[in-house]
Image 1 (spheres, rainbow, N blue to C red):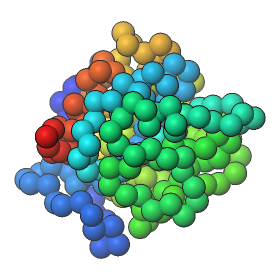
Image 2: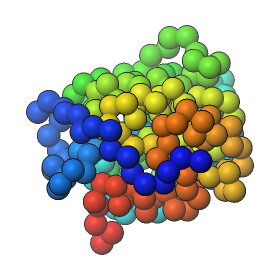
Image 3: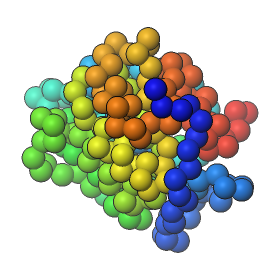
Image 4: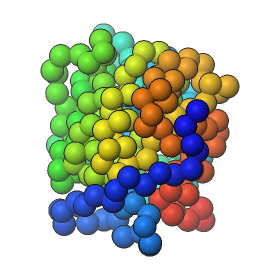
Length: 218
Protein backbone atom coordinates (compact mmCIF):
# COMPACT_ATOMS: atom_id res chain seq x y z
CA UNK A 1 0.00 0.00 0.00
CA UNK A 2 1.47 3.38 -0.96
CA UNK A 3 1.93 6.11 1.60
CA UNK A 4 -1.02 8.46 2.08
CA UNK A 5 1.31 11.38 2.68
CA UNK A 6 1.79 13.80 -0.17
CA UNK A 7 4.99 13.13 -2.06
CA UNK A 8 6.14 16.24 -3.90
CA UNK A 9 8.25 15.15 -6.87
CA UNK A 10 8.74 18.58 -8.39
CA UNK A 11 7.04 21.88 -8.83
CA UNK A 12 7.09 22.33 -12.60
CA UNK A 13 6.20 25.59 -14.34
CA UNK A 14 3.64 26.95 -16.75
CA UNK A 15 3.81 29.97 -18.99
CA UNK A 16 1.99 33.22 -18.36
CA UNK A 17 -0.78 32.25 -20.79
CA UNK A 18 -2.73 30.60 -17.94
CA UNK A 19 -2.53 33.20 -15.17
CA UNK A 20 -5.66 32.59 -13.15
CA UNK A 21 -4.27 30.63 -10.15
CA UNK A 22 -2.24 32.38 -7.45
CA UNK A 23 1.04 30.85 -6.37
CA UNK A 24 0.68 28.62 -3.32
CA UNK A 25 2.90 29.22 -0.31
CA UNK A 26 6.04 27.32 0.59
CA UNK A 27 6.78 24.14 -1.28
CA UNK A 28 3.16 23.35 -2.15
CA UNK A 29 2.86 22.43 -5.85
CA UNK A 30 1.25 25.07 -8.03
CA UNK A 31 -1.73 23.02 -9.19
CA UNK A 32 -3.60 24.21 -12.29
CA UNK A 33 -6.19 21.53 -13.01
CA UNK A 34 -7.97 18.47 -11.62
CA UNK A 35 -8.43 15.54 -14.00
CA UNK A 36 -10.82 12.74 -13.09
CA UNK A 37 -11.45 9.28 -14.53
CA UNK A 38 -14.34 6.91 -13.91
CA UNK A 39 -15.92 3.93 -15.60
CA UNK A 40 -18.28 1.23 -14.31
CA UNK A 41 -19.90 2.43 -11.11
CA UNK A 42 -18.36 5.84 -11.63
CA UNK A 43 -21.44 8.04 -11.95
CA UNK A 44 -22.30 7.85 -8.25
CA UNK A 45 -18.65 8.37 -7.35
CA UNK A 46 -18.45 11.45 -9.57
CA UNK A 47 -21.62 12.82 -8.00
CA UNK A 48 -20.23 12.28 -4.50
CA UNK A 49 -16.97 14.02 -5.40
CA UNK A 50 -18.63 17.05 -7.00
CA UNK A 51 -21.23 17.35 -4.25
CA UNK A 52 -18.44 17.89 -1.74
CA UNK A 53 -16.72 20.74 -3.60
CA UNK A 54 -17.42 24.34 -2.58
CA UNK A 55 -18.72 26.93 -5.00
CA UNK A 56 -15.38 28.78 -4.78
CA UNK A 57 -13.27 25.77 -5.80
CA UNK A 58 -10.53 27.51 -7.79
CA UNK A 59 -9.46 24.91 -10.37
CA UNK A 60 -11.10 23.59 -13.52
CA UNK A 61 -12.06 19.91 -13.46
CA UNK A 62 -11.89 17.75 -16.58
CA UNK A 63 -13.71 14.42 -16.39
CA UNK A 64 -13.56 11.24 -18.46
CA UNK A 65 -16.39 8.78 -17.83
CA UNK A 66 -16.42 5.69 -20.04
CA UNK A 67 -19.79 5.59 -21.81
CA UNK A 68 -21.43 3.86 -24.74
CA UNK A 69 -20.50 6.05 -27.74
CA UNK A 70 -23.73 5.10 -29.52
CA UNK A 71 -25.99 6.92 -27.08
CA UNK A 72 -26.47 10.57 -26.24
CA UNK A 73 -24.86 11.32 -22.90
CA UNK A 74 -26.82 13.02 -20.11
CA UNK A 75 -23.94 12.83 -17.65
CA UNK A 76 -23.22 16.58 -17.63
CA UNK A 77 -26.90 17.29 -16.94
CA UNK A 78 -27.02 14.67 -14.18
CA UNK A 79 -23.87 15.92 -12.48
CA UNK A 80 -25.00 19.54 -12.72
CA UNK A 81 -27.85 18.66 -10.37
CA UNK A 82 -25.39 17.43 -7.74
CA UNK A 83 -22.90 20.29 -7.52
CA UNK A 84 -22.73 24.03 -6.98
CA UNK A 85 -20.18 24.25 -9.81
CA UNK A 86 -21.16 24.80 -13.46
CA UNK A 87 -20.95 21.59 -15.51
CA UNK A 88 -20.78 21.32 -19.30
CA UNK A 89 -20.06 18.72 -21.92
CA UNK A 90 -16.69 19.66 -23.34
CA UNK A 91 -16.33 21.08 -26.84
CA UNK A 92 -13.19 21.56 -28.90
CA UNK A 93 -11.56 24.93 -28.25
CA UNK A 94 -13.17 25.33 -24.83
CA UNK A 95 -10.74 27.22 -22.60
CA UNK A 96 -10.53 25.76 -19.11
CA UNK A 97 -11.96 28.17 -16.58
CA UNK A 98 -11.58 28.02 -12.79
CA UNK A 99 -14.39 26.24 -11.00
CA UNK A 100 -15.97 24.80 -14.17
CA UNK A 101 -16.48 21.06 -14.72
CA UNK A 102 -15.85 19.74 -18.26
CA UNK A 103 -17.12 16.27 -19.19
CA UNK A 104 -15.70 14.44 -22.21
CA UNK A 105 -18.41 13.54 -24.74
CA UNK A 106 -18.80 9.84 -25.52
CA UNK A 107 -16.65 8.59 -28.37
CA UNK A 108 -14.09 11.41 -28.21
CA UNK A 109 -10.73 11.69 -26.49
CA UNK A 110 -10.43 14.90 -24.50
CA UNK A 111 -6.91 16.35 -24.41
CA UNK A 112 -5.60 19.61 -22.98
CA UNK A 113 -3.00 21.69 -24.78
CA UNK A 114 -0.70 24.40 -23.37
CA UNK A 115 -2.71 27.49 -22.61
CA UNK A 116 -5.53 25.44 -21.16
CA UNK A 117 -7.53 24.70 -24.31
CA UNK A 118 -9.51 21.50 -24.78
CA UNK A 119 -9.18 19.54 -27.99
CA UNK A 120 -11.49 16.65 -28.83
CA UNK A 121 -9.96 13.98 -31.04
CA UNK A 122 -11.30 10.83 -32.68
CA UNK A 123 -8.02 8.92 -32.76
CA UNK A 124 -7.89 5.22 -31.96
CA UNK A 125 -9.24 3.96 -28.63
CA UNK A 126 -6.70 3.49 -25.84
CA UNK A 127 -7.14 0.30 -23.80
CA UNK A 128 -10.30 -0.24 -25.88
CA UNK A 129 -11.92 3.00 -24.65
CA UNK A 130 -12.53 6.46 -26.05
CA UNK A 131 -12.49 8.84 -24.22
CA UNK A 132 -9.38 7.64 -22.43
CA UNK A 133 -8.21 8.71 -18.99
CA UNK A 134 -4.61 8.15 -20.06
CA UNK A 135 -5.00 10.62 -22.93
CA UNK A 136 -6.52 13.24 -20.64
CA UNK A 137 -4.07 12.74 -17.76
CA UNK A 138 -0.94 12.69 -19.92
CA UNK A 139 -1.99 15.79 -21.87
CA UNK A 140 -2.82 17.67 -18.67
CA UNK A 141 0.57 16.81 -17.21
CA UNK A 142 2.32 18.04 -20.36
CA UNK A 143 0.25 21.23 -20.52
CA UNK A 144 0.16 22.19 -16.85
CA UNK A 145 2.99 20.51 -14.97
CA UNK A 146 1.64 19.74 -11.49
CA UNK A 147 -1.93 18.49 -11.84
CA UNK A 148 -4.19 16.53 -9.52
CA UNK A 149 -5.49 13.25 -10.93
CA UNK A 150 -8.36 11.27 -9.42
CA UNK A 151 -9.18 7.68 -10.37
CA UNK A 152 -12.64 6.50 -9.37
CA UNK A 153 -14.63 3.27 -9.70
CA UNK A 154 -14.11 1.37 -12.94
CA UNK A 155 -12.83 -1.75 -14.64
CA UNK A 156 -9.63 -2.11 -16.65
CA UNK A 157 -6.33 -0.26 -16.46
CA UNK A 158 -7.16 3.07 -18.09
CA UNK A 159 -5.67 5.88 -16.02
CA UNK A 160 -2.67 4.01 -14.63
CA UNK A 161 -0.20 5.22 -17.27
CA UNK A 162 -1.70 8.69 -17.08
CA UNK A 163 -1.35 8.73 -13.31
CA UNK A 164 2.33 7.88 -13.73
CA UNK A 165 2.73 10.83 -16.12
CA UNK A 166 1.00 13.18 -13.68
CA UNK A 167 3.22 12.01 -10.84
CA UNK A 168 6.40 12.30 -12.91
CA UNK A 169 5.68 15.98 -13.59
CA UNK A 170 5.12 16.92 -9.96
CA UNK A 171 1.43 16.20 -9.64
CA UNK A 172 -0.59 14.36 -7.03
CA UNK A 173 -2.74 11.28 -7.59
CA UNK A 174 -5.78 10.15 -5.60
CA UNK A 175 -7.49 6.76 -5.97
CA UNK A 176 -10.85 5.69 -4.60
CA UNK A 177 -10.54 2.91 -2.04
CA UNK A 178 -11.77 -0.64 -2.54
CA UNK A 179 -14.42 -0.42 0.17
CA UNK A 180 -16.36 2.36 -1.61
CA UNK A 181 -15.63 1.54 -5.28
CA UNK A 182 -18.23 -0.61 -6.98
CA UNK A 183 -15.47 -1.75 -9.35
CA UNK A 184 -11.88 -1.53 -8.14
CA UNK A 185 -10.00 -2.36 -11.35
CA UNK A 186 -9.03 1.18 -12.37
CA UNK A 187 -8.08 2.41 -8.89
CA UNK A 188 -6.14 -0.78 -8.26
CA UNK A 189 -4.20 -0.50 -11.51
CA UNK A 190 -3.23 3.07 -10.62
CA UNK A 191 -2.19 2.02 -7.10
CA UNK A 192 -0.08 -0.82 -8.47
CA UNK A 193 1.70 1.65 -10.77
CA UNK A 194 3.21 3.28 -7.67
CA UNK A 195 1.94 6.74 -8.65
CA UNK A 196 -0.89 7.10 -6.12
CA UNK A 197 -0.42 9.40 -3.13
CA UNK A 198 -3.79 8.97 -1.42
CA UNK A 199 -6.22 6.03 -1.30
CA UNK A 200 -9.46 7.43 0.09
CA UNK A 201 -13.16 6.66 0.55
CA UNK A 202 -15.10 8.47 -2.14
CA UNK A 203 -16.75 10.79 0.37
CA UNK A 204 -13.34 12.04 1.54
CA UNK A 205 -11.91 12.91 -1.87
CA UNK A 206 -13.50 16.35 -2.23
CA UNK A 207 -12.12 17.46 1.14
CA UNK A 208 -8.67 16.26 0.09
CA UNK A 209 -8.88 18.26 -3.13
CA UNK A 210 -9.84 21.37 -1.18
CA UNK A 211 -6.91 20.77 1.17
CA UNK A 212 -4.47 20.31 -1.69
CA UNK A 213 -5.41 23.51 -3.47
CA UNK A 214 -5.91 25.57 -0.32
CA UNK A 215 -9.49 26.47 -1.26
CA UNK A 216 -11.76 28.16 1.29
CA UNK A 217 -14.81 26.17 2.33
CA UNK A 218 -16.85 29.34 2.87
